[in-house]
Length: 318
Image 1: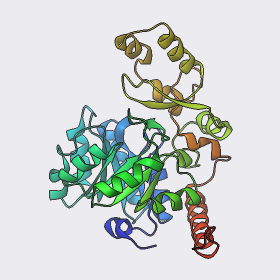
Image 2: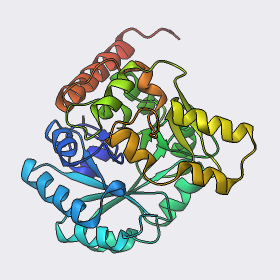
Image 3: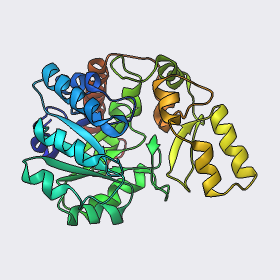
Image 4: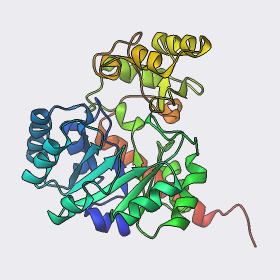
């Protein structure tokens, strides 16, 4: 499966595991990279010394390329940058900020830079900033999302038309058929988060993993757009959010309600009532917790079967 992304990252499959806070440590990243995809360490929930530890352990666990996801709003981002450069991490995925800030600095150290966007406008700005590729993430995605609620099905072809650099599709993709659909729309690769939350190597709490497996269509919703859009599983905390909106609470009051550590409480510590449970709509397709390598294998096998069926059993003849 050779294309622009596999060549850019020196990986076997155009399949990337998202760098999710509280869920994407070195064990998951190494497992995905060893299976032929690109594993990513999610640094947004890590103190600088913790990221240093995870990068070192990941390098010990795999000789394949891996990446670090770097939220631009992280308060000690300069320390994370130092760690990444010191350990010669080959690829960085930046998000939640201006890609111009660190792209050239990272590239000057031989690091490939990918920026996550949710609109055509920001894809074009990222290309102008010199990034090597963009992740175009649709409304269906878990975690922090775009305010415009553009779905992946609409976003990918629009971004594909607007930029010349490789495009990685994200949001609502959890199997090989979804991967093929995204690539048919013009993506060079896919980034998958939610499916890897429910993996054995994910650092998410078992309570959260099991809740993801049990979730059905309609169990998630995009909310808190006034602060930063996030897709949540409906739970007691989400009910408090709904009540706050019903009472016309201010943005400051919403921030107070969110407080600090809600995501850690829910996803990492397993508090299913008071925690923030971030996951994508595709969770309705996830039925069991599996080893990451098996997830990669199943997605690739499904992709190849769907591609073969598409090529040999076309529904329309002209």
